[in-house]
Structures are given as structure tokens and as C-alpha cells.
Image (tube, chains in turn purple, cyan):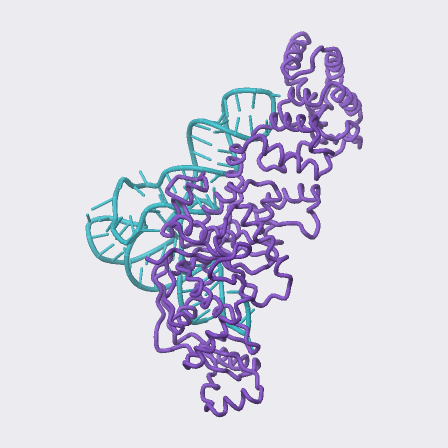
Length: 530
RNA sequence: GGCCCCGUCGUCUAGUCAGGCUCAGGACUCCGGACUUUCGCUCCGGCAACAGGGGUUCGAAUCCCCUCGGGGUCACCA
């Protein structure tokens, strides 16, 4: 058996599409599972832009998910070059050979002529097959046209008397009637190749054994098969995997429909999280990543294992119950016969859930480094190297525990970093916990306790509050909630005693002082922030 | 419109090729409850699906036919 070789061939578009990433992942998994070779080939045929710049985010996404490529940009390989823009000679030679063998022909129809022929076919409600007018030209005429510089494209002459059949590795037998296929252009007037042709030439030259790609390419397949046959290539095995759909739909996930996705119930939380976080870390402008891009998940602080895990489950399953899988498990189990045929909607809820799992698996040191980075970029801390800061954040993370779902969640706890005078109080929390009869008195009394207690640690503070409550004949809830709101501005958060310890006596007392004023202000006062 | 693909809980899916083990299993979401100072976590419990219709068969989510629905693609884009 020939060796397993798969490829992914992205266009340098400046970002990595999450759906494309899933397809790339399947190619990578298949190669790794079989001990084969994974090739990265860059489809930069008709790009004017700076390829290097537009390719960088794509390679970054591969690196982030640790999908290494055996041949391709940066690493090279024996069957390069791996940029299609550098493979023009190969396409030219192949086209010339087909021309000399009479399998392709020069078509002198102008674009306008082609278009009107197409319109006419449409009007008559018959399938459009092209004119083949140029096929009737005698060789001398063709020579003369070429000599006089008349523009032409090269078309493949589809053998219309047959059907094309593939045995697709995920969809089974698929058949087309070649009699319905118009002659495709394989080379433009300027000699540059078209996608279907370049792909066929490259897949064969790079000895790709399995063409694993999204279903949207299924309709390109008969042309490619015919081209392979004309060129005398052995056919690769095709595997058309479902495309990744927008959450809860069957529609292909598309960057052009972002506005629509904002209102998608499942997608919404991802957009809202981005709205909260990105502006604070300087990514809220033009370069703001969106959930269709792999970069979004990286920037928001997801773990690559989680995205890897979630992507692998989009259209593939290990069995009837396993959801959480390490990359080793997935590589070990990945086969094409367990890929489903129907479109797989991206499932943000599932991704978030998986992320929670993989975050818990991460080590405290890494959590600390990543969170320090977010805090620093948001301007909440100055020096990430300072020992005191690091200790403080480490303690906060310890207190946060599993509340940290993605790294950027640490920004939700900014009350531990802002100046006491700038602490923002949640309006609802103030109304519910501070503006109640008796609260001001209890708060003031407990403040005095805090001011005089010896050690200001969580355990001691808890004991203090409990005994104080007993003496006052109050219930714990009557004081703990007001204190929480008074010192954090919020009604929910980490364990309150840990919070008090983290803040320290001075800051706690100052904040309670502020809160006491809020207790007294009338209902309609503007003193409390949102 | 032509061609092609797909159609199991709200979502991701198992089961479909080799019909009975399935009045359909898991996970996520959601809803209850327990625990907790709040949130979260965890633990219990619950709602919830074979697109429809005909066949074949003792028996069909699984095989056949039709219908309906959804999607992809129809370039001198990739």
C-alpha cells in the first residue's frame, strides 16, 4: 500500500476560518493516525496581496493548536515548492502535454460570447455545456489566431459519453453524468492555471493519497477526476467531510454573515464576551477577532486542547459516549468511517463546557502567567514581574478556583485592582443589599470590629463575623451580603472572607466607608454606578 | 432552475452498511432539587428526537419507493 499523505491547501486570506481549521484538523488527524504525512500547501495563485503577511495568522493558528506539518512553508520538503505561485512551470507543462494530446483545446470565445451562450441556455431551460465553437476551427486557423495574438483560454474537453463515479470515503458511491459537465477552463489567457487544474496537478505531484476536504468541493470532484484520468494519474481517495455550519443551522459558517450571527442565540454569548473583553485589551478596533476566526478563541483565552477537542467532535465521534478527549486519544481513534455526512453546526455551548474541563486540567503556573498578561494589557496591573503583584494574583486565582473558565475571565474581578474611590457599585446590588433598614447600622458596627481585629485573614474573619452575628442576634446573611456588596460592589464573586483578606484591612475599611454613604442616599440618587 | 449531498432530543451525536439487544443511548443547553455567605463547582432528578407517507417483513430509526424540508455547487474564484 502506498503511504498515507494528506494535505490542507489554504488561501492566504489573513485569518484562519474555524471551519477550515476543522477540515485541516481532520487531514492532520488522519495522517497522524496512520503514521502518514501531512502537507501544507499554499493556494496563492491569484493573490496580489502580501502573501507572507496574509499567511502568518494561518500558520499561527496551526501552531496554536499544535498541528505540525511535515512538508510546506518554513519546513520545505522533497516535493515543493509548496506555494502554488511558484509552481507555474508544472502547470504549464501539464497543460502543454494535454494540448499536444488533444485532450484540451484553445477556446477563442470572448467572455461576452460565453456569457450570452450561457444566458441563452438558461432561457431555453437546457443545461449549459459551452459552445465548443473553437473545436471546429481547423489547425491552420488556430495557428493563425495564435500567431496574430488573439486571446484564448485553454479548456478541457470533457469526455461526455461517460459517467464519473467515486467511492467517497465518507459518503460512499457518488456518481455524475459527464454529459452534463461544461468544458472547464484550466488555463487563463495569461497562462495562469485555474484552481481545479492546479489542484489536480499538485495533488498528483505531491502524491496525496487522500483528499480530505469539505463537502462544498464535492461538485468540483468529477472535473478533477476527469483531469486526473486525462493526465494519467492514479486517483486519490476522496473524502468529503461535512462543512461546519453556523450554530443551530445547516448553513455553511461564513464570515460574511457575522451581523446575522450576533442574533444567533448560541453564538450571542461569544460575541458578548468579545464586546466585554476585547476593548479592554486593545483588540476592540479594526483587528477585532470574531468567533468565525480561530484567533478569537486564542485571544479570548481558550485553551488549545479545548478547541482541538471541540473541533474534533464536529462531525466525528469516538463512540456513543466519549466527549472529553485528549489529542492522543483523538489521534489514536480517528478514522474516516466515523465521520458523519450531515453538516455539523458549531456548538459554542459545548465548546465552553469542554473549555471548562480543560481549564481545570491546566497548571496554576500557566494560569498565573496568562492571567497576568490579561490584567497587564487591561492596565489593571503595572509590572507582571513584581513579586507582590504575582503573589496577589496567584492568591486571587486560587480563590477564583473553577470560576475561571477562560483566561480573560480574570478581568471580571477588576474590583481587586481598582482604587477604592473608583470602585463601581452595581445598582441592583446596592438597592437589594445596602438600602435596607438596619444595614447601615450593622455595617458601621461590623466595620469597627474589622478595624480592631488582630489578624486579617480569611479564617479569622469568618470566626469574627460568626461570633459577632451571634452576639448581635442577627443571621449571617444579614451582614455578609451587605459586606460583600460594600467591598466589591457586586452581589456575586469569590468567597467573601478570601476577598476581604485579599483586599486587606485598609482598603476594606475605606470601601465600607463609601458604602455607608450609599446606604443613606435616596432611591433616585446617582451615587451608585451601574 | 440543473447537478449533487443531507434529514435521530433545542444543540453535538450513538445506533443505519451486516433489520429484533432500543416504546431510541450519551453529552451540552434548559428546568427542578440538594449543598453553599453569593456566584460558580459538584451531586441527584426532569423535559426532549427517528421529517412525512406508502411498502417489504413475524418484526424497521435501520431495507425499497414517493413526497416534503434543508444545504452545497453551478466563474477566465479558491
